[in-house]
Image (cartoon, rainbow, N blue to C red):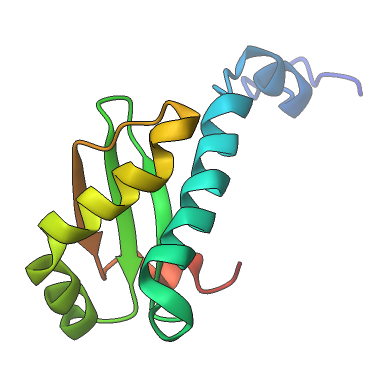
Length: 112
């Protein structure tokens, strides 16, 4: 595509070349593994109301919930959930320090 001489716009292809997407396949794989463990720990009823969203570098798992009620109920069981998740994840080398429950991000994952 030819650049217009009198504009200061950049071509999209030039901008894309400079982007750093930070794609980490290991992180994606860990999230998939944790989602499977989460399903085993909470069961079929809860899996439709709460799912794994992310796993941070400081070993904090974020679970998105369909609403604040679900987030609150899971928060009350957080210590047990961390323990059960760590027992499942032990073989994979994943260690969960904490779980955060977020209902505000549910809409982001609704389309998945």
